[in-house]
Structure formats: structure tokens, C-alpha cells
Figure 1 (cartoon, helix red, strand yellow):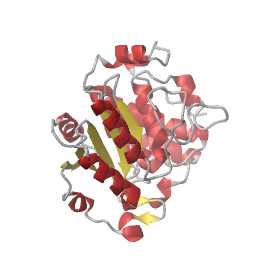
Figure 2: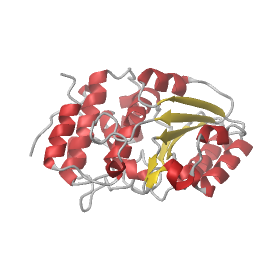
Figure 3: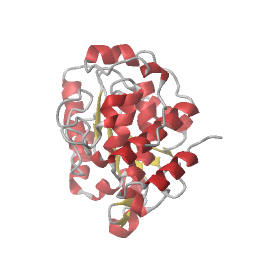
Length: 287
């Protein structure tokens, strides 16, 4: 097996004990991720998917930059993150690995029998994953209820929810947005991975909502439209303080960083062959 031995300095000697106390210890030392850290995470994602024979790589690569920045630089121990686009569980697991919440042994069991790291986020076993998700269109409602609960307790806890662009074609997502605006859930940040592709084609071909942000503009929310692969723009958007719910439209590329996967429909489903894996790793080699 071709081995890519890339690790984050913060987890070289850390076991992935799963307690809130230990997580608080890990993430209080926040610092900007270097480009090398982003590349290491992307290589580890590819390795994990290749060794498990699992697809859905394109949508994982489109959202990984944002998840790495969010978890390493903005997420606090008492916050909650909900991955509505559950088929990108691999990116979530790599982000948790990057902050020491999952270890190498965990990643080796991705998508295998009796693993905590199922193809979609599991309902239990990993404290940083509050809900099982993957049936698209449900995650934003779960995030809305969680954010309202935090607000009713007068706490400072925040909720982040990552949705796909395709699930904004579903009525349940818009019903959740109505609820969010009615209750003025300013502790909720909604991230939209807008890579323009979904399971059966482009979002325009399946059920056009273009441009999605213009459909949202009638709601009392703060909307930002940014390059979802630009670390500076991601940081600026996440840092913005608002008194309304916040929606960040991440204009992304499915399969970002890998030339033969970028903007391709088949990157939504197909796993990598060994030759493709080697080629993908080479694409992510800065030299």
C-alpha cells in the first residue's frame, strides 16, 4: 500500500480521547493553518478514501478548506457543528483528526464494519457529531432547533451548519430558514457548499435556483458570497459579527485540487483506482 505519512504537529503524540474537557484543551491554542497543513489534510483524505475504496471524494474536497479553518480557528468546545451534506463525512473526519479528536487508527477503519467512522456521520460515539445526517434537507432544521435551545438558555454557544447547494431545492430547507429568521437565531452560521453539482447533474440542470443568493436575499439574514477555497475570505466571513443569522455562500469546486476530479460529475460517486490515487497525490505535491 502506498503510504502517505502526513500528520499535524498537534496530534503527533495525542490519543483521540473523546471528552469535551480534552477537546477544550486542544482547541484553545488556535492558530492560522499554513498551506502545508491544508495540503497534508487533503492527502490524508485521499489516502483514507482510497484505502477504504470509497467515493464521494469530489464533495469532500469542495468543503474541506472551510471545515479545517472552522474547526482549527473558530470552533469552541461548547459549540455544535452539523454536517447536513452527510455524504461529505470524510471531510468532517479529517477536520476532527486535524484537531486531535480522531487518531490514525480511527481513520484506518473508515467505512469498515463496526467502525465509528461510517460513510455518513453516526448517531452516537463521537461527541462532536450530535446527529446522524445524510438524508439531505434535514440538517438545517436540526441546526435551527439546536440554536434556539442555546439561545433560550442565554448562553454563548454557537451552531454551524454546512449544507450542499442541491438541498436548497428542498422545501424543508426553506421551512428551516423561515424558522431561523422568525426566531432571529443570530448564533447560527449557515455554510453553503456551492459547487454547482449534485447527484444527477448540475444544480441548474436538476432544478435551477441560480443564483441561490438572490432567492435568499428577501430574508432578514446576513449573506456573504465568497471563494470557498480562499483562506483569507473564509476567515473574514467566519469572523464577521452580526445580529442576524449568517449565511456564507462558499463558491467551491467539486474535486478541488485534483486536476482530473475538478468539476466532474463522476467525482461525486466513484472511488479512486491505485493509478488515480498516485496521480491525485502528485497533484497535491507543492513541489
